[in-house]
Image 1: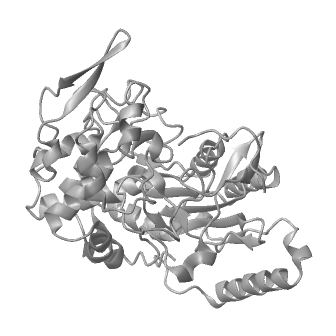
Image 2 (image 1 turned 120 degrees about the vertical axis):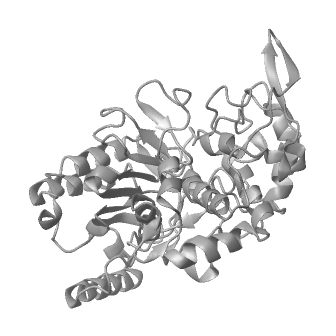
Length: 449
C-alpha cells in the first residue's frame, strides 16, 4: 500500500492461571477461524470480532452496562478505519477485569489482533529502564546524585548551545549532569531535532539522522558507543533548569551496562522480564515471533495507511544489527507482559512473592520530582513516570495516578487509589486520533466503586 502524501515525523499475563474450558474453546475457535481465513481470503474481509474476557466485570467494580461503552469506543475507531487494531487491558487489584483484542494486527495479510500480539513500546521502555536504575541504586552500584561522567567519560564536562540572536554560542554547563537529572528529564538533553542543534546531531548520526530522533535500532554499535558520542554534543538547556524530553533514558541504558557489567538486554532478562514472567518482552524479537508482531500504520487524511519500512516506519526490530539496546525507546512487549511490570510498580515493587524494588524506591519513582518544570497544570514527572498531582489534570485519573505512552501509540495509566492498571496498545505513527483519551474516559466512567 502506498503511503498517502502527508507523512509527518512524530512521536496471560499469567495473573490468572490457565483459563477455564470455556476460554479454551474460545481460543480454539479463534485459531480455527484464522486458519480458515488463510484458506478463504473472503473471510478476512469481514470486520474481525473482538477477543473477550469472561463477563465478570461487575463483581470487581466495573459496571457491566458501562463496560459496553468501552467496547463501543474500541469498535468505533476500528469501524471508521482510523485505527487498524488494538489491544485493551484493565486490571483491578491485580486481576484482569477487561480484555479485548479488536481489528487487525496486519490488515494486508488478514492477520487479526490477539491478546498476545507484540508491540513496539517506544517510550514505554523508559519506565522499565528507570526501574532498572533504581534496582542498581538499591544494589549500591549507583547514587541518584552521582555524576553521569563517572560512567560515561564524555559526560564529565558537558556544554549547552545557547541562542544569541541569529548566532549560537556553545557554553559550558553550569554543573555536572546527575542520574537524577536523567530520570526526571531535567538534564537539558533533547532528541537533537531542535533547529539550532539539528545539524550538529545529524553529523554524529543522531537527531535527524536517527529516525524521528529517538530511534537507534538500526545502529551497528553498542548503546554506550552511541551515548559516548552524544556526550560530545551541546545540549539545549542547563542541567536542572528545564524539563526537556530526549535521550536521557538512553543514557541511563548505558549506565546500566557500565554499573552492572552486563548488556542491558541481559540485565532486562535476568533481573526484570525473567523474574516477572514477561516471556515476550525484549529489545529485538525472536524470529519465531514474526507473525505475532503488529504492523505499524500511520494516520493519513482521517484513515490509517500502512507505514513504510525503515527508521521512521516499521523499524528494525526483526532484522538488522540487533546490537543497540535503547532504554528510551527500544523494548517490545505484549499488553499482558507489560501489565505485570506495571502491577509490580502499583504494588510497591512486588508481584506475588517476588520483590524487585522497595516501597520507598517505587514511591520516589511515582512522586513528582520535577516541581513545575514539567507542567504548571497539575501534572508532574517522577523517575520514569508522569504523575497526576491535581484531579482533572489528566482526564478522570485520580491524584496519585501515573503513566506515560509511546510514539507508536501505546498508552497506559496506573491509578493506585482505584487499584487499576489500564493499557491501550495500538501501532499508529503519526497518530492524529483522540483514541487513547476516549478509551481512558470510558474505562474511568465504568468504575462504580
